[in-house]
Image (cartoon, rainbow, N blue to C red; front, side, top):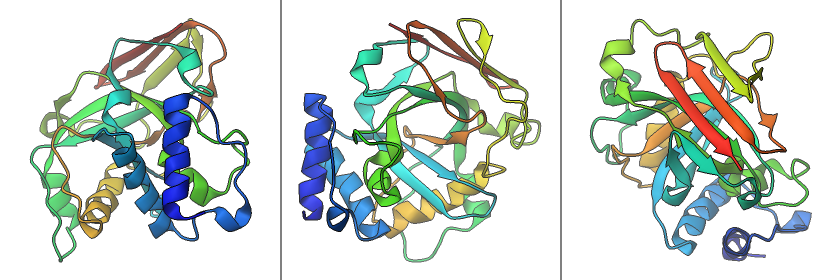
Amino acid sequence: MTHDDLAQRLVNARRRHQPIETVAPERLPPDAATAYAIQQAVIAGLGTTTGGWKVGAKSPGGPTSGAPIPAPVIHASPARLERHAFFRVLVELEIAFRFAEPIPPRADAYARDEVLARVGQILPTIEIVDSRFAEWPNVAPLAQLADAQNNGALVTGHAQPYSTLARSLDFVAPELELTFDGVSLVPEAPGNPAGDPRELLVWFVNHCAAMGITIEPEWTVTTGTYVGAHRIDKPGILRGHIDGLGEVEIEFV
């Protein structure tokens, strides 16, 4: 399987709503560069555009990864979504950002101060985690990376100016709530495993620059869960709240 073959299988899985049953080990992406190329090929193969990105890390300063999110699967809150449009539904409460201006690729790396100076808006989001692989989560990490790092959809809350919240918001441990039909899904010790999610933006900007991608100001860049991932197996109302940022809501039908 070439990288184009896997990209086409991922496109077909989305279009036909048929999961990929198996991928032989020798046919997995051999490296991250190939997985990132497949991400872009899937966006092109779907005939759509990028509407946002997801980025994340498992520890502060640890290895970071990301994936583009197709524009048609980004929804404004309150959203009404059919569970059967996904292969599975897991939900995560996150903080996201939008930049104030396009950020073009360049040879020199963007410094942290340059990146944060270009942040324009901040907002709460709920990411729906899904996979086009039937055997998920027992799927090789590079295959998951190729498959948009398991993104299924993104629901966005109301955006606010980043400049008004940059100093007052607790980015590491904000007060928050996530409920499904009134039952809390928040763990005993919530928190983003990456620490302050703004640090992920530096990686993101330079990752896009290395790939020759211009970052658009309308893109929503979501930066990892504060509450883990929770599976939703029935209809109901999911409500998220982050103090200082506001609400985000999904009705699953």
